Length: 186
Image: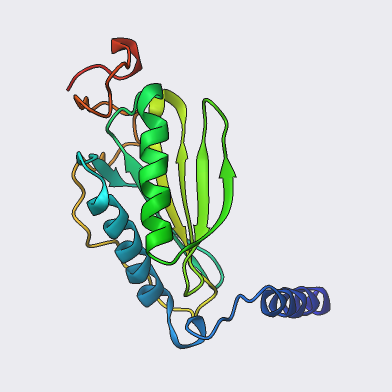
């Protein structure tokens, strides 16, 4: 059993090196620093969006050598405005030097994916009821403790709830055309 586990760990490490998991910057960064860089990436794109979207923290995930930070948008984004949001974010990421890696043009659940120059993967996807989800996945970095984000959410935190609710904040701009059933006013 020990042999099998050791073999699996060695295979994982080798595969990580092959896909560039231990990049130049990642090798000098620990998980907390990577989580803070993820927060910077998320905060910068959300500050760029006007009118402002209201968001809350999604769960932070910690892997063997990587961290995932999330922001869940609580502003209802109508079907008519989803393309505007995706286009705005796409242009901002490109201006910031990010390389676009994939675009999902699905009518109901579109998404865009990019990679920063320092190896962080970023995405914006639209889910049910027009809820937008931002996510940053770090490259492989040195193991360390990861603290909660210090970024101040602009919507309730929904602490103690098992799941974050569907979008429930109305915006005259972002929710334009959305039915009351899809999110209502708040």
